[in-house]
Structures are given as structure tokens and as C-alpha cells.
Amino acid sequence: MKRLTRGFQSVPSFELVDIGLLPGGSYSIAWSINNAGLVVGEATNTQGKLRAFVWQAGQMTELPALGRVAVARWINDQGRIVGYSGADLRYPHSCLWVNGELIDLGVAPNYPIAWALCINNQGTLVGYVGRPRPNAARRAFVYTNRYQLLPSAMKYAYAINNNGWIVGVVYDGEREKAALYQPDGTLLELGTLAGANARSVALGINADNQIIGWSNTPDGRARAFLWQNGQMVDLGTLPGYRESTAVSINDAGWIVGWAAKGERQLMPVLWYDGQIYNLQYLVQHGLSGWTLRRAHAVNNLGQIVGYGFYRGRTRAFLLNPLP
Image (cartoon, rainbow, N blue to C red; front, top):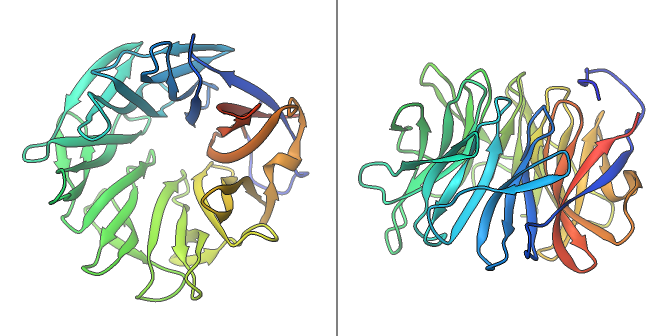
């Protein structure tokens, strides 16, 4: 499998690979894939506990946990994995897994909760910290050797690229807005598709600093966007679907996410060469028994991970592009 390049190619087709389950488990979701094809996510084990996993070449391995729950959210090209773990999902610590060993990154001062969501190839982590309800305060952070809180307006950091650009959300006092934090300390609000009274969220960024996420439109619906060169563009949705969300973009400009008719009616999609495609229809092999639901990540080889229902059970999948 070769690295993708920009420029028109034929619409890709895929083979579906079942990521499977942990021994005795009943559920799995894939969250991230690196450029070596390693996949991470969450799955239940034989005790019914939620566990982080790493998958490679057909083998799913349970990762150590701090308590009853652990979730792996991102893996970089060095195989370093970040996520969170704790007694439950209400009070997690940020975690780093290196060569299968768990490193507890703890929490930031005055914030007893921490979620690590992304790590770039330089080993810099981003995510957010918080306090429990009723305060429920949130602050975005960047982590190298310690927690460094980003400007107070930035509440969530969802992704960081290898240039050190961080995307997430700022709160302007009334609504959440997609945001970009640059290494020189500049914080930019990226706007919305519907003016100042709408919401938007930035969820992913590639090496060319193209940013994706979702925004409200003038009719109040959520719609996927691409932001580049200071311009936010509506990516649209599938025919018959009301909304869409973009969550990952690779360096060739492939974007994945999902279209939605409602909370329970989701379909994974690929935006490719300016067009939107239903991923279910692009799978040529391995689809029997599956109904796909969400695509969560795409790497620079065009491999896509997410989850769907396999014979009625929630299950992680990998889509490999066919030659």
C-alpha cells in the first residue's frame, strides 16, 4: 500500500477488515489509525470493562488501565498512543501508552479531570481538562513534559499537526466557535457557516493546515466544513440526509466523517476530489453482515477506521483501499 498524493484519481473502492473484539468482549470502536496501519480504540473485555486496545495485522491487544475504564483516542507514527483512563469516565486521567506500558499523566493543577485526545509525531499531546459539575469548567491544554493550559477562551483542543497547529473550540461568552492556536501564540476564531449567532467546532487538521469540523448553517443544521486560506466552505451532506460532520483529513485532502438524518440514522462518508461519497457503497469486499455507521480517521495511505454494526453488535472496522 503506497502513500497517497494529491491530484485527481479514480474514486477509491475498499475492502472491509473486521477489527474484531477482545476475548470475551461484545463491543469495539476504532478511533485512530497511523501511517503504519496500527489501529487504536475502545472495546469491552471478558469482565465487561471498557478497555483501550491497539490492533495490528489481525491481532487486537488490550492495553493497561488505571481503573475500570480506558479509551485510546490517537496513535502517532512512532506508535505512541494517547487517551484517558480511570475508575469511570467522569474522573479520568490523561494517559500515554509506550510499547504497551501505561504512563499516567495525571491532571493539571486545579483541574481534577483530564482527557488526552491527540499526539503528533513530535510527541506533543493536546486535549482538555475540567472540573466536575456543577462548575463543569473546561480548558484546552498542550502537554510535552507537563500540562500547559492554552488561553482561557479555548475550551477544547481536539487535534494537533506536525507543524504544532492546534484546533478545537473557543467560547466567546455566548457560543462555541471553531478555533486555531498557532505555535507563536496566535489564537484565531475560524467563524461559522451562518454568522456570529451560530456554533462551530474544529476537529481535525492536516500537514497543509487544512482544517475540518462542523458548523451550524443558517437553517440551524450541523454541516461539515473545510477551512483553508481564511475561508470556511460547506462540504454538504448525502442526498436525503440533513446534517454532516467531518472528523479527519489526511495529507492528500481526503476527508472522512458521517452524514446524519438524526442521532440514530448515521452513514459514514468520504469527501474526495470535492464530492461526497457514501462509504458503504464504496466497499467491494467484506461487507456481508455489516451496516457501517461512522468513519473516525483516515491515514495517508487512504486506510479508514470507524465503527458499524456487525450482525447487530457495535464493531470496529478498517477499510483498506483496493489497488
